[in-house]
Length: 417
Image (cartoon, rainbow, N blue to C red; front, side, top):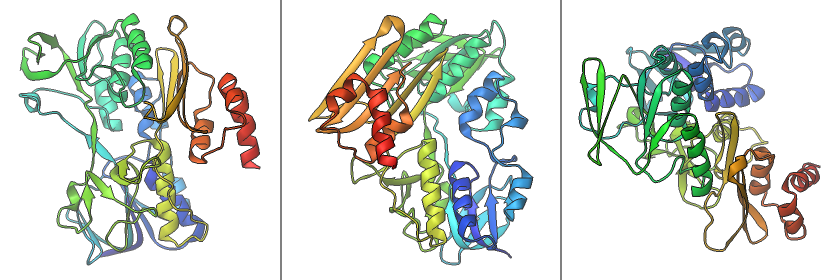
């Protein structure tokens, strides 16, 4: 049986961050990197650009084989994990191969979550989660064609924008009352909604798909309100769920995602988890949450890797702070931390809808706890650092609100010293 000291399952940001952390301390220990995809490691954030044609699929990889060879990494693509045995420290793959490990990191990410819609499994549909998905969807873009996108989250809106730019007539169906509800408040979301409308994308809010049916190469989408839509292309973007199905009978504790502590350790000795699949403590609350963002995956992977090699420089995970950036139809938006103010919060907001400018700062006492913007000059990276470091703003709060770009840079310069 094949044996490795370190086994990392999942080759995106969490897995690669852990790999780098391990190799900083242990350059010789056998390390195996496994992915169920058939290609080299890449970032899921590149998929909208592959879909649009701005990025070519052979130019998107985060590491090439030479990079991996230089780190003495055994790379195994096209290997899907189906079982984990924490007792015997063995992982079984769909091919039947077993790998014995000493230390295991589960960075298996998340998979598209399909809604319980009658007939959905019987009609042609696309998702946008992998490089293969992006290429398959790109091949279906037809000028003058029609498309229905289910879901107005980041993935759904990315897909809708690129289909529209490809000359398709696009309708987005969203069950909630606004677009991007997990990232922006109602006022900011309305501006994003308007940008899509101005570019020919119709978005139906407070609407659900009740049934789908295919006939003559067309898919009919029945709506809960009683109407229907007909399209040649159906994209399902109704959320994702952590990939944990392979952990049945493993002993690893799961609650939606894999439960981990502040060092990314699971309840089973020798097993860590990081990234979209991991459920760790939040920054604003002690309860554990899922945080499927790139910066979070990088941080969790680094912490897991450092703990796997007993790196003395390890600092425990401080909790998840949401951070997302989003570009749409020539505009740029971001959200960090709390988006909707809670009791006891103070909000400073500037909105100029006609100019597509929006900026919101959320404070709790004398600390920044949230920031969001559309075409704002604020640096989301600096905002998240001020939040995570719990920077005291009492003496400069008024100046910060009046000139947050300048004052935040001055504060971070002082902090980094």
